[in-house]
Length: 127
Image (cartoon, rainbow, N blue to C red):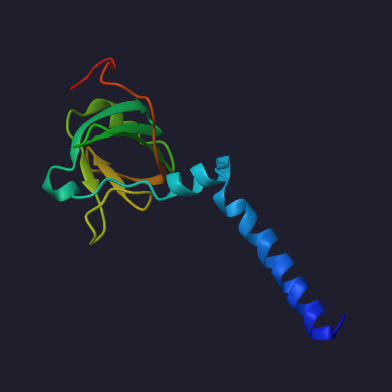
């Protein structure tokens, strides 16, 4: 076996090993896709509804009926006592993990923003 043939076989084996997990759905795939969760067009009615879970978490419903959980970087005590909120986005106008919420003049940054599959409209205290 020549040196070139050996390197070619080694390269093909490495390529096959790296490509094999690409087609498999794993929990890591879900986490990566969930890390990119966002609601577009927040400035044009992209948010239909929201519910406060706690002083550190907020459920947000998009215009297409999908629910998302925004976990806050720290407690946001004002969140529970207001009927209106302000969502702060960057220039893309999409609500994502880099966004924040304003409640009663207090700005609270998101720590994470993820899709909540299977959540229905049967939430208590629906606005």
